Length: 237
Image 1: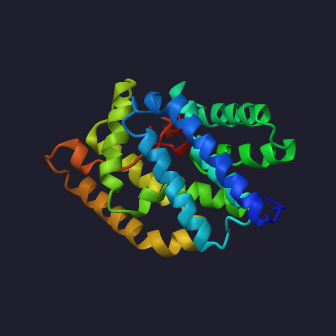
Image 2: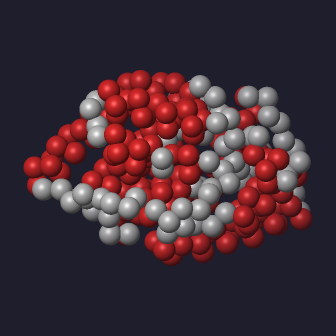
């Protein structure tokens, strides 16, 4: 984002109020539908928002800047397209948000700045020089470097299986390991916070591949991509 307007105290209060209304509308319109998904549910979106706020603070993007609120809006609506379809849901989410913000009278340039962030969450994540895009990307995949990495993987695998996308344990572990090796956190803050645990998760995956356990998959599955068609892009067939 090349330009971010500084906000006065009254404008900050207005942005906070406007965001609160958008969040209420999001929960009303998409909360129940997202809860039908095991991984890409309301909890994932709210966690992504929470991590956006944390990383924004660490990267010195503050509520006194318009881009802080733009980033939060993008995070809040980045997965609403999942209620329609998994493949290409980022574009659907972006277009929906453009329409929503236009109806609410947001400036066209600001709408563009917000909506253009969402397609960068598509896997594999593309490079961007925009710090807000980097924060959103890292927040979306925050669990790559957390203890709940394997728990979330089980949820994602269950979500995919309900859509008819089945994987053996071996294929799941191997494909997830390849994705982790390709992925890199984008912000300095995420690298500092998450890279060590991510390395540990990689080691655990390697152990699972070399010595597969006979345990329930929801315990030991690893996080994988949200759009199954990306297996081909990573060469994971």
